Length: 127
Image (cartoon, rainbow, N blue to C red):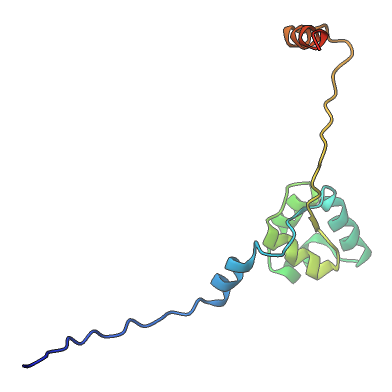
């Protein structure tokens, strides 16, 4: 009896690149971060304290002058741009997200009773 084996070439295994490996691990054990609400003030204050003009800061971090002007006027930068600025100026722009357990709702005092308010009051009387 003759047995023939079929040759199947091995598929090369591709190891994940550094960027793929880092993106796979990003969500694990790292707190969520967001841009600080006063980022534009922090950037301007740090830039001025270091004696830099907007143009000089833009050259240092290899971005356009227009981008620095937008950031200092309050336009939210991308995370990568924020990290460049943090490194160049030695400041913190990305802060950990604070989870709010309670939310408060302000009800204007000058507002009259709504149908929803009346329904809530009616339903609560029965309890």
